[in-house]
Length: 275
Figure (spheres, rainbow, N blue to C red):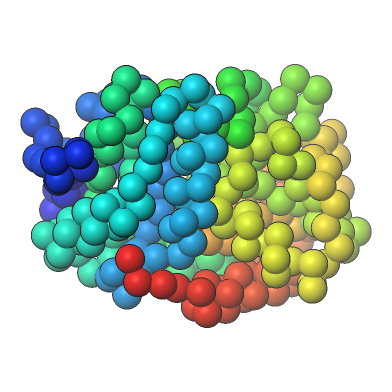
């Protein structure tokens, strides 16, 4: 795999960084404390809801007391330049803004082939993790380190699902979480979890398929679930067929998840935009 393509957008333009890394995960420890977002490209230089990502960054900065004045035109131009430089067919990219100096924005790209079709079709196993997110509505990069440490404790699981102090399943370590029981979709309210960009799409397409209730599912109710799935900007809708050691429904991807997945994919196709 080729190394990441990384640059720092400064008031004086795009500058080089004093390090290199093979992946975004390897690059993360070089990045300063601050806020971030992760997204991916489609058709090489198209994106989905980039302004929503930037809106969330500005909200995260406000919640964290970071004085951010984001030049979106310059940021888009720098992203286009790095995409041209990388020559990846598609990229997964991270935008990181330093708490100490928010005028310097780190842009990191790695090649991205998308979610494997086997995962989309067969679903994944996730594990619950009792952990507290300091400020769930802000996407801060101290969470990246905690997420990596938590993932190491559940090496056989595709994703960790945050379990709060009262035994409710809130969100994934890098995703939003949804459960289906009795033909109703349950997901935590926006005040309890990060407002994921892919979650915004689910909130638009799911009500035409299933009733949506903004209430987290309790761990004690997992054995009553028929289906579940998670979403993230880079992966879209990822079906879940097992939580901890409990298979869901028939142990296969359920019909409502399939319908939501198809509606999500169609929405994405209709809303792509050039960077």
